[in-house]
Length: 334
Image (cartoon, rainbow, N blue to C red; front, side):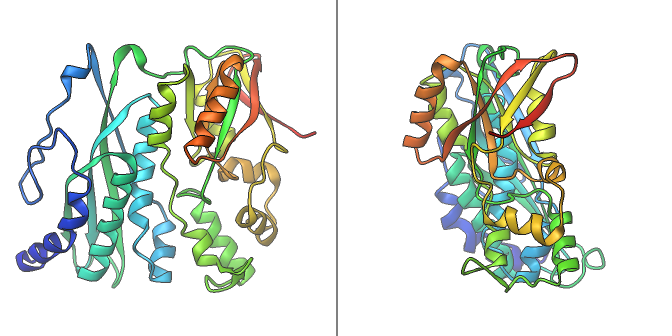
């Protein structure tokens, strides 16, 4: 990348990045490596938890719509929501931004969005890489990847091992499709002849489809101090159908009441416009539930009240019952 362009980009994003600074950060932007001092005084057996991800083909819709200021939040969310699932607090985040020719306005919008996501997660944006690769990307295209590290006490790691039959499953509302299922979404737009400017309930489809992924970190870290959480499941690609079983023990299954929540207008539109079968909807999209919290039935009301008090839209969506063999999901309705 041009050195002058790189310096100007750093100057543009410095104020946003400064807001993410937290104890432990030892070096600012511009160095060859980021330094972070672990808060070892708070832990007896600290375990580092790492996560890396991208935003998939949602990025193509952002480019098409010319909306670049929230896709960075998606990038952070996909990493830190995975980290908190292990019971960990995200500490810091790095990004990788690649393009054919750097557009300072677009890049600064994207990275300011990343900084906003880090603020929401309580993680420091300690650095990243901006790469210009002419011939690799078409004009106006760019790609994103992110990497984050968190920390958890070894005895507090959430791995699903404490889940038992009778546990309650609490769903936390999603802000939209988040960052999964966009290959199908783009296909639905194509076959239905719909445009991003078309309106759904008074808002352009672009707003519905580019709504940033909700970051659940601070609410869940707070919940850990109130009740014993048995497991968390981040509902990403594969939906409830494939993500819930990842945190359930053998010989158990999740029973989900599909009448317990409303998926929302954008999911109704996707199902209708794409003629998507309900089973495929639950296997592809989060269908309105971005995170599932598993707690003992006796703790469900306290957990529910605490999460709703923090601004989450939380509700009981099912329970864990005895299964036979590999964990799975059963959908029911009243």
